[in-house]
Length: 204
Image (cartoon, rainbow, N blue to C red; front, side, top):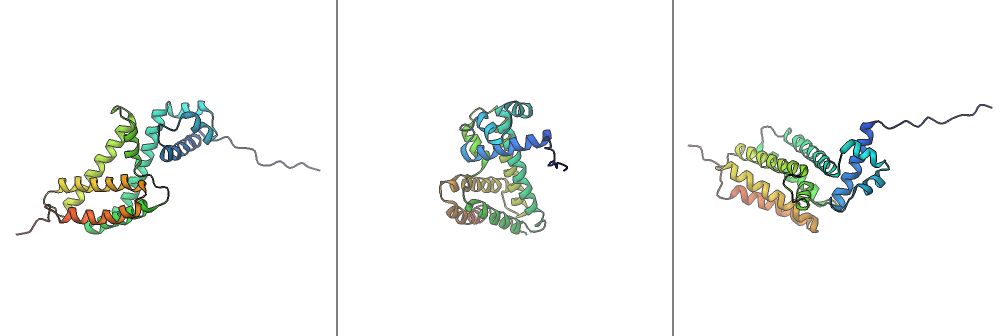
């Protein structure tokens, strides 16, 4: 009788190992914070050898930076998908971002913006993860400034900074158990920003 063998175990590709390490580390960093998560825990949770982790990332600092790069890419992928649906409707685009935020802020286990969380833990401005976080927030202010220009605000840079500030405030407050409240308050605050001294330019 011929003995049947199951399919041979396929050796994981380097890219697959890297993705597994990063996915595991990202989950742990976001849930527990970067200081509370050591390399040994990432290794144990991902089921890979420590040498593989260091081969792909070199250090824990590099792994934290890769975590923020991945979060940054995912954030802007979602943002751009919304923007693409509102090329000629700045007000509709901003409203769509508020709908998107509403879902984020209310979801169970939400711990806020990973960029802000990491910056709060890492005080060295030279840390590669801080540089990524800074770039993320600079880009957000620039995006809101561009939106304010399309809305014909009198001072678009000021309005852009204000919008970025209130979004960040919602990110920071929601994990304290105030997700639903922040989702509602965010809309009210955005309306107040747009109706404040930075009113639309009046055409002659």
